[in-house]
Amino acid sequence: MKLVTFQTKISQEPLFGLVINEKFVVSFAAIMKKQGTFVDSLESMDSYLHYLPASYDAAKEMMQYAVEQLHQFNENEISPIAAVNLLPPVPNPAALIDFGLTPRHLRNAGVNLLQREYTGPEREELTRKISEKFQKDLNKVTFSYYKCNHNALIGDGDTIHWPSYSSYLDIEPELAFVTGKGNCIAGYVIFNDSTVRDVQWPDFQAMTGPTRCKDFDRSKGIGPFLVTPDEIDNPLALDVDVRIGERLHWKGSTSEYSAHPAKVMEEILKVFTPLPGTIIGMGTIPDCCAIETEEWLLPSDRIQITFDKLGTLTQLVPDHVKITEPSRWEKRSDLP
Image (cartoon, rainbow, N blue to C red; front, side, top):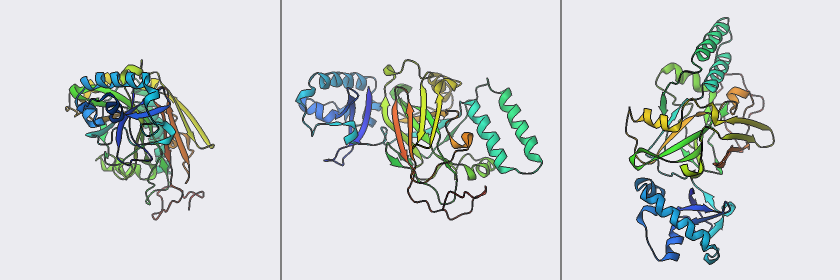
């Protein structure tokens, strides 16, 4: 199933529902009204996650009913996907954490950051050391994570905030999974962990984890759907396609993750017990961000992040960007 939290043109109240026939969206409330029943575990995404696995079985039955009785729903009860506002599918996450399980991205990003940060004779030596370190650890899995700003969520079609203290906004397309009751994997989402790169190095040097470079408002995109595990045969075999308007086109794959989501969950449980609704990012897909490609975002860019079986998460860059602090890196001539 593809589960959604959405708004319609006639109601601004968030609705919880699902996608029918890959074309339409219907709320569980509308289905229950047709059936003359009420299932409290399907009131919202929160209740769905807290009542698994019973809520999954109930949702599956309602999806089957909606498919068979599609003709009985009127235009106020069922809508084309394009006609609704898709909110973050998990609107109230218990927590949001992010791993770095793509060693090639970490190596590429680390090297490029150093190239930007150092211009003297030490640059070559530092670059060599970090390249050797990541090459040596390429097959070594390190289960380290950072805690993201779970209050900075945005959904499909929303605009990322561009902080005034940065000139280098970037995206980080990732596979993420969401936990349910009993520490199960409730489903998968596309996660865009937006980052401003020219303030990232000072964050690393402070040794307190990412702060200014990642925790800014409207920086954490998820969506468009929460896709249940039964639709994903192998989460480590999904093609990734990223398009920045007509300008840029990047490709990648979840096959570069160094661990399966089930193993990631196993490692998390050694540290803490995640509450239902915890979003867990796996790490940035290599070759799919500007710190690797040196192709940077511009105002008014339209970002489309497509994962096989998970859909397309669309994110927008503001039309007008106001930068008030000079960048620590070279000035961009293509920005105001």
